[in-house]
Image 1 (cartoon, one colour):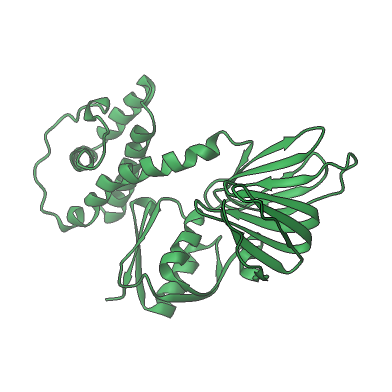
Image 2 (tube, rainbow, N blue to C red):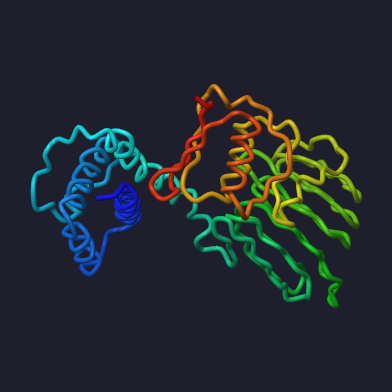
Amino acid sequence: MPNVDKQQILAQASAWLMRLQEKQLSPQELEQLQQWQQQSPLHQKIWQKALLLQTKFSDLPIDIALPVVQKVEHSSTQYYKKYLWLLAFLPLCSGLYFTSQQQQWFADYRSGTAERKSILLPDGGTILLNASSAIDVKYTKSQRTIILRKGEIWIETQHDQLNRPFFVTTQQGTAQALGTKYHVETMPDYSLVTVTQGRVRVSPYQSQQKQMIEAKQQLRFDAHHLGKIKPFEEGNIAWTKGFLMVNELALKDFVIRLQPYQKGIIRFDSKVGKIKISGSYPVDDLEKVYAMLAQTYGLNIEQYAGGYWTVIQPAK
């Protein structure tokens, strides 16, 4: 059987393991899984190996999967040594992934991997969600509030006939717009506000401090402290045009910035984590991004299991 067919079966097995990790399958889905296993001896062999490996790394009960018909013989094929171990880690990683995504699932608006989504607000303003982002929209008689649950957004506010104040809230605090266009990004430990037009007043939750940010300025803050106002960096909002723009950014941090556009997991060898990355990268064409990185910085970048696992290593 050609290697491409084996790769497809590995990708399919990964997808089934992720579904098992995410929820208990229905009787119809279990029947589909059994039918998938019975397509060929290779399907059964890969699935059995995947389950045996996977149970070493996660709490998935093996009995929720239908038993495989035949016991798989030991295979010394180098192909399996290279790829099957990935299947053991995929359900564990997907479990962590799904946990992190829960804050998105029940949001009013959310965007998927590599998806940017434009939202028209009730007052005529607009919000652009970056990939893997989520917001709630709460308009009352007294104020307009956007709750940024995850990711980052670009906002263009409009005059409100009721003169209600406009706020964006994150885990760390609030950013009140004063007739403006601005960007807000939330991370576990901090939030970042970048203003291109008008002004924004930032208020951390656990502090009495307030700070006004003018056009062409940006500010990073957490729940207790305000950072220093810095000049506007175009790279913060390059994603609105479909680019990831960086200057001397460590590869390990570049991977974090790239992750919302890449399905699955990106991992890198510790030897390359400190390489400084610069340039403008098209987030809608990851193959081109990886080709640019490989050629410019002497890297070997491989993707496995249908793109669910990306590995960045030094070129051999």
